[in-house]
Each structure stands twice: as C-alpha cells, then as structure tokens.
Length: 168
Length: 273
Image (tube, chains in turn green, orange):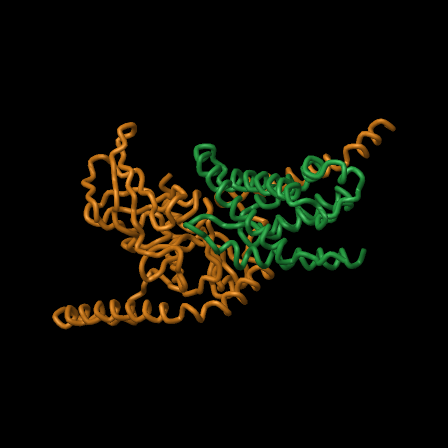
C-alpha cells in the first residue's frame, strides 16, 4: 500500500512539473498543447475511494491552475472526469471492474484505449469551454478539443508503453 | 432525521463533487472578470519561485538576441540624443537635471509568458520590493505588452494585451482618431482595433500608437501597423487588424512605466463628473 502511495505522489509532482514547464509551452501550430497530466487521474488505483479520487483530482487541477493563471478551469475539468471515472471504467472494462479485479497492465489494448479516449475528450471539452467561456467561439472550442485531444492521447499511449511494467 | 443522514451518506460523493465543482466554477468566473483580487495567481512565492528558477536555466539561450535588441535600442536612443543636441545648440540650453519628467521607468524580466489561450498573463520577476504597483503600463523597446494587474513582494502578474479583458486606448499616428485595442483570441501577433469612426481615413500600413487618454501609457508608444481593415456597416466603425511591432511570443525584458502625476490627474477627472 505504501508503495502505491509513494509512486502516485511522485507521479503527481512529476506530471505537474512536466506539464507547466514543458508541455504548456509546446504551442504546436500556435495553439495545440497536450495535457498529459490527466494521466494521474487515469492511473489512480481502481479500488481507491471515490471521495479521495475527487479530492486528488481537484488538487491536481488547482495546482496546474496556479501555474497557468487560469482560475479554476483545470480544477473543474479534472473534477468532472474524476466524477465520471467509475462510469468510464464500467463502460470500458465491464465485469472486471465490478469484481474489483481490474489491473491496467493486464487489460486488452482496445478496452484501455476506449477508457483513455473517454477521459481525455471529456476533460478537454470542459477545459476549453471554461477557458474560452464564450459560446460565439464554439467552433474554436471544438477545434482545440479535437486537436489537443489527439495530441494528448498519443502522448499518453507513448508514456504508457515507455513506462510499462514487466510482467512478473 | 435518519432519512436525511441516510441521504447524505448515500450521495456523499455527489455532494462532495458538487461542492468542489461550484468552488472551481467560482474561481473560473472570477478569472474571467477584470480587476478582482484573485486567489489563484502565479504571482506567489512557490509558483513564482519555480518559474524564476526555470527561467534562470533557460534564459542563457536567448542572450544573443536580447543583446542585439539592446544594441538596436541604444542606437535609436543615441541618434535621438544627437538630434536633440544639434537642436539645443541653436536654442537656449535647458538644464536637464532640473527638468522633472512625469514618468518613472522600471525594468523587469519576463519569467513566464503564455499566448495560446483566450486570457493570457505574463509573470515578471520584480514586485512591490522594486516599487512596482498595480495599473502601471508595461512596454518593450518595440511596443506595448500589457498592464500590471497584481503584485506580490517579488513577482508581478501582467494582464497581457492578448487577453479578452484587455482594452487599451490607442490612436492612428497620422490623424488623431482614437480607438480601442482588443484581441479576438486567434493570432498572438495580430490584435484588433475597434471604435475608429467612419470619418477616419484608414490605410494599410498606417502606424498605430497609444492614445495617452488613460493615464497608464504615455502618448505615442508604438503599437503596430494596420494590416487589414473594413468598415462595419452595422455601427459605422472600422474593424481593423493591427500587426504588432512586438513579437508577443518572445518578449524577454520589459519596461514598466509609472505616471507620477496619475493621482492628481485622476482627482481632477473625478471632479469633472
């Protein structure tokens, strides 16, 4: 249990620093940035109580907000995906989630991909809607969500392959 | 009573979620309104310090370009100085020490700059300890950058002109027609000039400078040139795209301008109303 706590704390700090110092300055084609830090919410242990998941996600988002001067947009977006996480898990992994036997490393690629897709696009849609905060720019919101979402998903898959634990 | 407690226990996750969500939405709405003291700001000890440290590491890469900018600015100032000397020799010498300028200039370094969002801010590594305070204008040697919004002891947060809350009084250099500078969130080097009346003669390539009506920026600081314009038939004002002289994606060092007569001017202004 202690090991899980340690690795998750380390992941929190590492992802936030990576996000605010490098990934938020990518500005590919002028406005496309990946938001890899939500990997923390995606990889939180499945059996962690929902209250803790909500609180940690809120804290994660708020930390990024402090660096980015963006009010509470990251906090709100992270909070919503944390709230919808059980739903996404059940939808993607089905019976394995209900029986609390789910381990990310052992799941099929397709199931994992659906889960990541769901989380990333919900997060990005809320993030950009709140950041732009103007329905006149609905096309810009959708455009940013799509492009940044693709970028984020690629980076998440890449990171998961890079840090894959070896099968025991 | 039992039922209420049962209800609370049953929906504790949802209640906790809604509580945190309303808090974050409150912070979001606050961040979209101008001039409220903001709780979530990077001008604090921790984030400011980390940005400062990261900037120390990265700033060496740009030293060459900053040097070149400084040399170009010195060149320009020096030529102004010689022009003035040539002029002074034929007129009466004025002792420049006794001449009191209404403006004080401070300098600072940009340690964090974003320009890809709708509401952008810059963070400077100088604050109240360097006598920087709220509502001062921020410029570079090439053009305007923004307005100081919030200061802490060692850091300053600047509302960039690339922010939906920013509205700066500017005018056309050749014709004294005033307008307001805003940003539509698209290109970080192109801003929009609105409320220029139909009667003004606007041409592509016209220079736009600050208007000096707001007591924040002195008059005549360069802003950019007119890139595109069309007359809006609905309200008879021009919609003008202005290409900035500044590269907003690469700023480096800035000057902060304080108008020493501001309080006096504001007092007079209020008496008027």
